[in-house]
Length: 414
Ligand SMILES: *[C@@H]1O[C@H](CO)[C@@H](O)[C@H](O)[C@H]1NC(C)=O
Ligand SMILES: *[C@@H]1O[C@H](CO)[C@@H](O)[C@H](O)[C@H]1NC(C)=O
Ligand SMILES: *[C@@H]1O[C@H](CO)[C@@H](O)[C@H](O)[C@H]1NC(C)=O
Ligand SMILES: *[C@@H]1O[C@H](CO)[C@@H](O)[C@H](O)[C@H]1NC(C)=O
Ligand SMILES: *[C@@H]1O[C@H](CO)[C@@H](O)[C@H](O)[C@H]1NC(C)=O
Ligand SMILES: *[C@@H]1O[C@H](CO)[C@@H](O)[C@H](O)[C@H]1NC(C)=O
Ligand SMILES: *[C@@H]1O[C@H](CO)[C@@H](O)[C@H](O)[C@H]1NC(C)=O
Image (tube, rainbow, N blue to C red):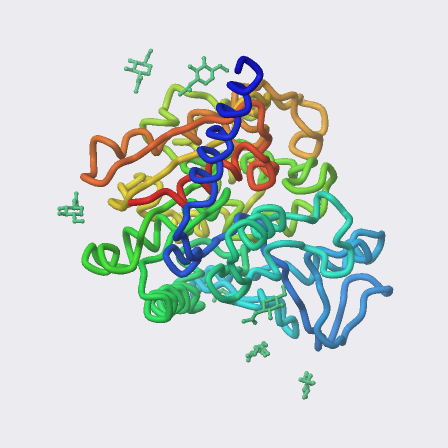
């Protein structure tokens, strides 16, 4: 008898674990999923037809090729060609942003996950270039989701902030995609976002669609290490250039290119109650700067178009309006994260700063990751916060505990 008891209990344990992990009647169409990636989280493809280039080795013409990311693009001098081709041009007279003449860049495969699972289509083994692959494969293997079917992706040209995504038609396509999924599967859609996908989707949920629309089409909103209130790495990018990069631990784009991306400015810690006037972020020979002093900072480091660009790019997402949908706000902690930058007089602003850190995910500080906490008092729909430690910013979408926690939400009975 004694030896029989453990067998019985393990049998029951087996039943219990089976019934909790494989919900008997769960079908992927019950909970269609849409993923919105972060900055640098979508492949970008380019086609060139330029009349002039900066470097004799750079091509003037090309068929479509993967400009972000491919190892071939990271070798000197090709890297400088890529950096130059990626630039945006800002015309202060018309307040318009445009690509470099003769460069067409696009984020392909809208609606599918193929271009957000791996950044380099040829090098699936390059670990940093794998992004949503592990999570997508998990849903495919364990719950029968299909890529481009019950599980979709909404890649975008991540050089553009919400204002640019709105004018280039991204939000209209996103709305159509969610409506199409709802119609096909007869169920509202779960949105999963990472990093800058946080503000990209928050703008959509609070400035583009109505509450009635959300009540119909959105099941729930799962945010992974969202950059709600900026990252000090953006301050470094506009001053001396981000010498670490976000995906690979090395510089990719020169400062000149970083200063032209709308999103470098969009991800600056915004002035407000998270980054107050007394919270000095940058210590430099020219002065001390809080989030209230960006115009002076930009002028002092010779970023001429910065203030005009910043005024156009700032939008309501910097006031953190509540999405007012069921929200799970997950984020990584336990990694030293840039908080304050100290520049030497020597060679300012061209040398990298000394950095003071705070807790965070290595890229986004805790005070930015946790802004979602205030929504529980501002909306009727529940808001659940959970930290995972230590989990680094980019690993948030690959970490097993995070994937487990996300899948529990997905398969939970209502
Ligand atoms: C390339 O640009 C030139 C004008 O600079 C134009 O005449 C030509 O048709 C373009 N070629 C392609 C393939 O778009
Ligand atoms: C903006 O206008 C000024 C004055 O008319 C002109 O000199 C300048 O070239 C214009 N800049 C651009 C980018 O068109
Ligand atoms: C860029 O390429 C896309 C996709 O082929 C095309 O729809 C668009 O018209 C092109 N834009 C320009 C400015 O050539
Ligand atoms: C989505 O991409 C996968 C490859 O990642 C491909 O097998 C599938 O056919 C695509 N689905 C659609 C609907 O295009
Ligand atoms: C900033 O510091 C000044 C001087 O210490 C103080 O008077 C002011 O109340 C502080 N402002 C905030 C928003 O904390
Ligand atoms: C949130 O949405 C619900 C309907 O889902 C609505 O009753 C409520 O008024 C909304 N709250 C806010 C603050 O908009
Ligand atoms: C952020 O981390 C610091 C320690 O680095 C801690 O003192 C502070 O309370 C944390 N703030 C939040 C909002 O979690």
